Length: 347
Image 1 (cartoon, helix red, strand yellow):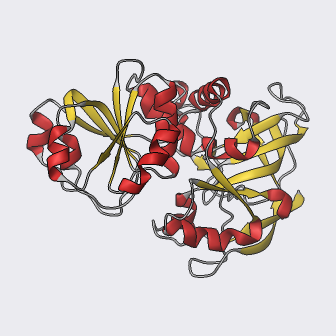
Image 2 (cartoon, rainbow, N blue to C red; image 1 turned 30 degrees about the horizontal axis):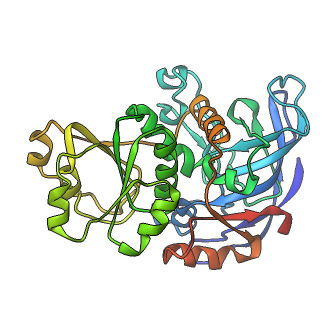
């Protein structure tokens, strides 16, 4: 065991502060990682404040992790000391269920060991995330990171990047496809960059006219202000795929009508209340409403390699660890372009 500095939420109502935790010594298949940067995801706020229920405390959040290997177990063959690596939202799964066997570990039917606020496969050992100086992870759940990109911009790819990349790949986005992106935040800006790099025509669908210039800089070809019903009518039957990144309650039916025959709207944002879905917008053009999680390990590595090839990173604001509580408040006000990333050298 090694004592590790971290930042933790003591309870759902207290601010995050310094915390000491014990990391296990690397086992035969483990990789020990010095954490260099950790992105701040909106789900960190939800879980640290127990807004989804089931949170356990003290909690060390963080699942957008980039670091350097400092030690490897005796049977590790994928990594060596000094390698740049990443860790995303999960650190283990059952490995034996049908989904795990297909490389779809994110849909493990038995038990996902999430990077924090979870337990390992023994269902007892708690997991603590990347707001810390180091962590130890099985090599099969560690990703290789290119040295071609700024590491602070790579960190959010481990969640925001793969969350948007996976549905784009699953629904076959490429040249000739029309993709709409609802919302231009941490997830939305990644969806725009990735879809554009895949060769699709990308339209940002937003309630904020002021975001048009930013959308175009990120790679969007079109921008539609969704507050005007007449404007939306002109967009009906247009899109092959809509990626909805918004985490607040909204009328999904008006967006379903924008899909062409066999079009799909994929939800990657998590609204707090169940939406009311009309059947007629679905049956009229054989449209689909779907959801998507993160990606499996292989797909996440594919995403990281794609981003390295196309020079794609998240737009970030790097912060010291002691700014994390202010960062949470600013996130809730959408006052960041587009992701906070913690520099763990400040811990």
